[in-house]
Each structure stands twice: as structure tokens, then as C-alpha cells.
Image (cartoon, rainbow, N blue to C red):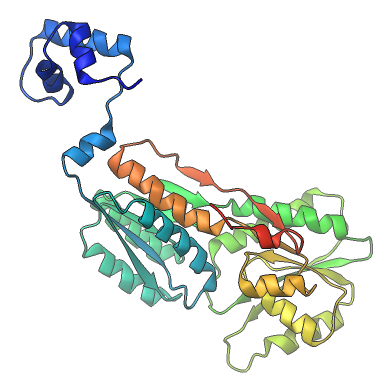
Length: 349
């Protein structure tokens, strides 16, 4: 049963107004009266409703979400869908949630960071895609005492209040363990990193590190090969590069793609009628799902991307309005998906 101020007043044998002054620290009361109220609060198990108090005080908060443009990086459609769901649920509160999108380039990230800092934000959620630029932004946010969360990618050295996303190292280890189940004695592995930028994102490298560490600690004699395909470099045909590489390395049976672009590998394999490779990648992009159903991607690692956006906004709301203590690391489950369960994934949060 909810404990009311009048219940505390009756227990402490004082007026409700006196209890109200004590709880909200308005005006003075005697030490003996304060002790009686403290004892009544303890015996009744009263906990102040901080959310209601903030609303009564007409507290207003603004949260800014700085994220990659989903029109340029399809993956971000789902985290943004989660943010939108949280916005809808919080629409009755005095909270403003704004989304700023940057292109996957350092200059765009810097530009949008400057735009963010010109606004009066009470909390910030952002994807720290570029490490040096992220460090600069985090310094400014710390200087202004603005709490911030990292989503999807984490740079703990910038000391965010919280990280919401997957453990990339554990995800890489999981992918390696699945590959080992398919690996035969005379077969090797290719880690194919596909990038449209010179920047290699830290969480991708952590996945690769987790993957290779697993095999270092196992008894497998498989060779692990690395191939970087930069698909926007002039004069570089990533399709011919991959096919030539596979022709020269006939023992490669497994292809691990540590980012969301497994569909690019799958499209090349399909075009050249190569159907004897075990392909494992990340994220349930429409293109990835389609090639999975066609048999050119075997496993996708899901990271509940919709829940990332949703949970980040709800947690920031709890921090600002409820004054809740937030865990600094909030890992989401690492999901194993194939063509038999993919249709049922991320239907609900």
C-alpha cells in the first residue's frame, strides 16, 4: 500500500504540513520533531516519489541523441525505431527528445557535435563512431556537467555514465565457437572486413580480437586469413579482389564478416555460384536476411538494436527524472539467428 504524508503525520503525531516541510526541506522544524518524523518514515517504509516530485515542480528536460544518419548506414534504422517508441511512451512528460544525424565522416561528426553543444541539453546519448572526436565531445560534456551515454559503441576512457549495447569481444568469441562447429581438419578461415571508410571502428576490431583469441586458445590448426575490402576506393574492384583471393586460397571454407555488411560477400558468392562457404556476420539488415534465406549467409549475430535505442532513452529519463543510479555497463544479449528463426526476431522489445 502506498504510504501517504498523512499516514506519516498520524504515526509521528504531528501535522501533515510539518511532514511536508520536513520531506521537501521547506522551513524549519525542531530537532525532536524531525526525529519523530524520521522514525515514522522508517517504521512505515516510506519512499518519496521522486518522479512525482519532479513533475510537481514542473521539471523539464531535454535529451539529444547524436547518431549516424540511417539513410547512409541502414543499421541505425532500428535503434532509431527504439528511440521513437520511447519518445511515444514518454510523450505525457515534460521531456524533449531531439535526434541529430551525422554522416559517417569525422568532419560531419564534429559539425553535429558543435551543433549539439550550442543547445541546452540535460542529457546526451551518442554513438562514439570516431575515437578522437568522441574524446573531444566527452570533454566538453564533462565540463558542462551534462551526463551522457554511449550506444552500440563504447569508449570507456571517455567515462560515459553508461554504455548500452553488445559486448563486442564476447560476440566475436561466440562467432568463433559457431565456426569451430563447422570447421573440418583441412579447412581455413577468412575474416573479411568490408569498409567504406578508412576508419576501422573499435567495436569491429574488438569482435575480430575476440574471434582470433578464441582460436588461439583452442586446439584448432586452422589458418585465419585477413582481407580488408574498401569498397569506395577508386580503382579497387572488391568483387574481383575477393574472388581472386578465394581462388588462391582454396582451403578457406568459413568467412567471418565482423560488421553488418555480410550481404556484400553473399552477393559476390551468389553471382559466382559459390555455395560451399559458411558465412557468418552481424545484424538483421534486410539485405542480410534476404541472402540468409537464399542460403548464402548461414548465421547472423543479432544485438537487439531496437532495444539499444529504446533502453538508452528510458534509462536517461530515469536518471534525469527519477534520479536512479544507472549501471555503467549494460550489455544486451548476443543472439544467434538463422533462416529458421529470423522472421521472429525484433518483433517486440
